[in-house]
Structures are given as structure tokens and as C-alpha cells.
Length: 414
Image: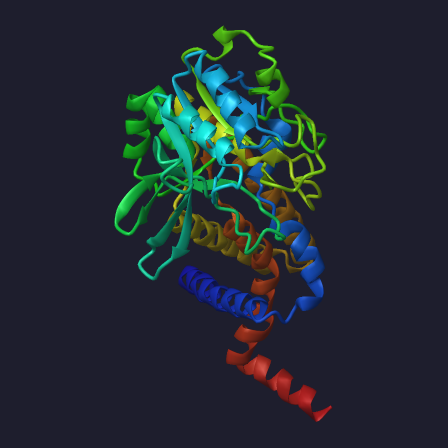
């Protein structure tokens, strides 16, 4: 009796795996295109977004970094700002902008090149272009030489999944380092942090991850698209040119020059803006909530505080799903055999409780241990187990019993 019971659960396990595979293939072939509008709403969401946007306590503000908005200034204006900030003795200056071509106003170019030449520690913008078959990039786009051939370059690319500028740019992760024609390039924020705390960057790189999840801390202020705390101090272009700041604010710190709108608070621009997990509308996002320079700032803070997010490997996620699936099969088989009239109600109730508990537990683990546990397949296993097991007993098993085949013949006669 017991042997038959365990054999049935094992057969049911493999039957449900086959059924899940078929369902996955059907979805892959877009048979359910009618549901695409609903899918698109949830496509840009992860469960951990809820933690970032709603559940986390406000972190401490960043003390080692200042953002400077270049607004719509020309190169001569940016040069003047660089000279003013550099006079306050920052530890490192990062330029999150590309000077692609010479200007007709050569005086502005000369002023900017001269300003860069005076900066002791300078990190310049670079962009990775053209990924080849070996997962190396064959081109590094940089500001044109020789006028801007100063400092070190570091790439500013983010991982967004967007095919072009018009697509939704959701930024949860970033590449730590990439190869360009065999030469290694570090990410922009990593290179800046290297000047501030080389030992912390060394430990960060020793983690050995090609891609890291950004542990977002906050923004410069609330644009209305986020409920995140103010974590970074930002100076507007006119405040710098008017010297409306104390030099102590800059001395010994990292400074990132970047575009934060025509002036701070400008939300009319779509230039260099991203959706992040801090977005208050974590389902069906509407407005991008963070400029690229602030994303770099969050990466910088994560490294400086050594507060990283770890992730369960994909194999562990599959193993957990398989274990939960088999345990549910055993439990639901008992219910099917002992109290068949209660099967539908009991299994549905258990599935709802299990799915909610697993989802909540994954959020708790993320909040307290900075560990992302992917429970997508586990919840799928929970939700498919009850009905799939009923199909197994009601159809598959009956096909292999004499009584079941006789009933099927009688049905055909009708």
C-alpha cells in the first residue's frame, strides 16, 4: 500500500514537470498574446522593488560624494565650474558627460582642456560600444583627443534591457568591469570609489561578480516619482558659478559632474533618466525617477559602505521549486485519497497560504540579509500542483486502469 502511494507521487511529480514544460512552451510561442497588455504592466517589476520603494528604513546620507549639475552650460561654463570645484581640493572629480567633437568655439574647448589638466585625480566618461561574439566590446567611445586626453576613463553603461532610448530603461544592475579589445575597463562609479578607498574596491572586486545588483540608498530630492529619502547633496550650476557653497563641502570628497536637468528640480527632460526600484509606482511605472549621475552615486555608496546585495544562484531556485512541488504532491495526494470531497477547497486554500508565505518570506530575507531569493518557480510550482495532480489522477491514472478504460468506452458509445 505504502509502496503504491510513493510510486504514485513520483509518477505525479514527473507528470507535472512535463505539464509545466508544455505550459512554458505554449507561453513561449505567445499563444496567450491576449494577455500581453497585462504582462507588460508586470514585466518591469521584481518583488524586491516593493522593499526598495515601500519597506526599507531611510538610510544615512552619503558624506563622501557631491553631485554637480552642469545644466545647459557650454564648455566654457563647465570649465569655469571645474576650476572653482577643483580649487576646493576634492579627492577626485568624475565627468559623466561626453565631449564627442570639437566645437567651433575653440576657446571653450581650450578652457575646458586647461581645467582638466589642473585636476589631479580625474575620471572621464567612456561608453562601451559593439559587443562581439566573445562578450568583449570592440569600441570604447571617449571624448575626442587631444584636447580632452586627461585623467582615466571608466564606462558609464548601465544594464537596462532597453533596445533604444524610447524603451523603458529599468536599472537594477550594473556591469562591474568589461573587456574592450582585451583591455579591462572599470565601471564609472567603481573607478571613482577606487580613488577614495582603494582597499574597499579591492574587496569589492574580489567578490568576483561580473554583474552586481545596485543597493539603492536614495536620490537628491523627491521628484514626485519616488518616495526615496534624500541621500545625496547636489549643487546647481548657478550655485557653483556664484560660489554659493562652503569649500569644506568639497574638500577631500568625490565630485561627479553630471546632467540633472536644466536646473535642479527640472522633470521636463528625458535625457539620461532611468526607472529604478525606488519608483513609487513599482507596478506599471509611469515616470522615470533618477538621473544617471545619481545612479552612479548609489553604486559609489554601496561600495563605500560595503553594503552589497547577494543573490541565490539559479540552480538553488530550481531545487527549492522541485522540493516544494514534491512535498505538495505528497500532501495533496493524501487529501485526494482521504477526503476527496474536500480536495478542491483545501488545495486552493493551502496554495494561497503557501504562495503568500513564500513571497513574504523572500521579502523578509531580502530586508534583513540583503539576499535576493528568486521564488518565481517555487510559487509557480505551488500554484500548478493542485489542478495538475487532479488531472493526473482523473485522466492519466484512469487511462491505465481497467475501470477507467471501461468508463471511457461507455462514454464513446454515447
